[in-house]
Image (cartoon, rainbow, N blue to C red):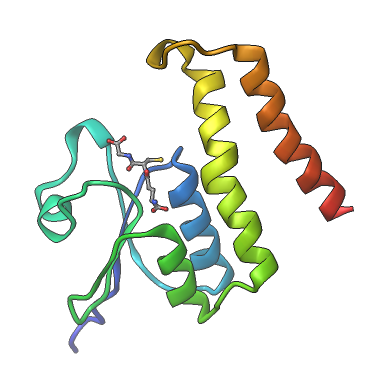
Length: 133
Ligand SMILES: N[C@@H](CCC(=O)N[C@@H](CS)C(=O)NCC(=O)O)C(=O)O
C-alpha cells in the first residue's frame, strides 16, 4: 500500500511566525511532516525550495511552496482575514515587531532610547488587551 505523502513543514520552535502557522495547523488538524530546523544550519532541501531561508515553510505534495506564515494559515484554514484582523496583524508584524526588536536588541541599532521603544511596544499590547476584553 502506498504511503500518503504529507505536506512538509519546516519550522523553528521559538519563532513566532512558525508558532502561528503551527497553531493554525494544529487547530485544523492539518497533517504535516514536521521538520524542526536550526536556523544557523538550515537543511539543504529547505534552502532549495525557499532560498530566502526563513521559517515557516510549507511544501505541498504537488511541490507548491508557501513561504509566508500568514499564507500558510490561509491555506490550512481556508481563511481570509477580515479588515479588522488584517489591521491587527499589520500592527503586530510592523509596529510591534519594530519596537520589540529595538527594545530587545538595542545594540543592533543607533540612537535607541530603550524605554521609549518599550513604551511604544506596550502601547500596542495595551490596545490589544483592551480589544480582547
Ligand atoms: N514574514 C515571514 C517572517 C519569517 C521570519 O522572519 N522567520 C525568522 C525566524 S522567527 C527567520 O526565519 N529568520 C531567519 C534567520 O534568522 O536567519 C513570515 O511571516 O513567515
